[in-house]
Length: 225
Image 1 (cartoon, rainbow, N blue to C red):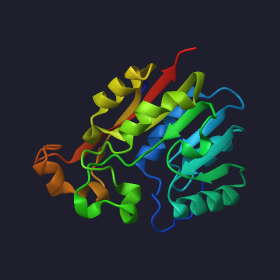
Image 2: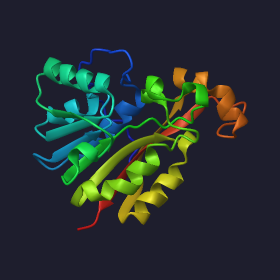
Image 3: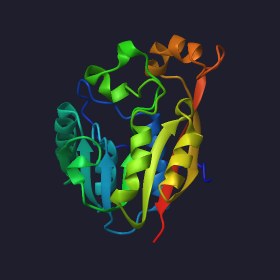
Image 4: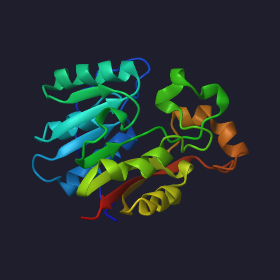
């Protein structure tokens, strides 16, 4: 695992209500990608794109990018931010892989909601931060379905937290025929979303009462040829 930091500059993003603002996990994923250097002119899918920050960043290096999100406000945001940064990405509205069913990509980028979430913070109004009861509402689906959307030797780049069981993601990806490893990690203080769920996380045993930080990781899962 290479955990050495690589400075990256996030694209210019205009905040939009109801859309996830790029944070430490976005930076960690882009740092890992900058070290790996995708093959020239790769076909890339930004899955659950939110503001479009990941897809915009890789499009700036000449890769062809499709971006997908199920929330209309995120689709609008990603299109606006792509225009702001002067890059061309195709932004589609729909649930995970459905809008690009049948397509295959060299790389798939994903930063889904992964924080375990109590009932009062679930639903479409909180979709950008709703990881489901155990944080794995979307993680499990991505890990099970991603293989069908990858080219041979294509790779998934997935960022998540220790709050949502990293080992389960690795197990599910390997059950799907991919080889998965942690390629970057960082310990980060709990942010506002985690703090508003703190009692729930302690009561359910996701963290201890004295914990103040979480481990963020980037998983790279590669499909064999």
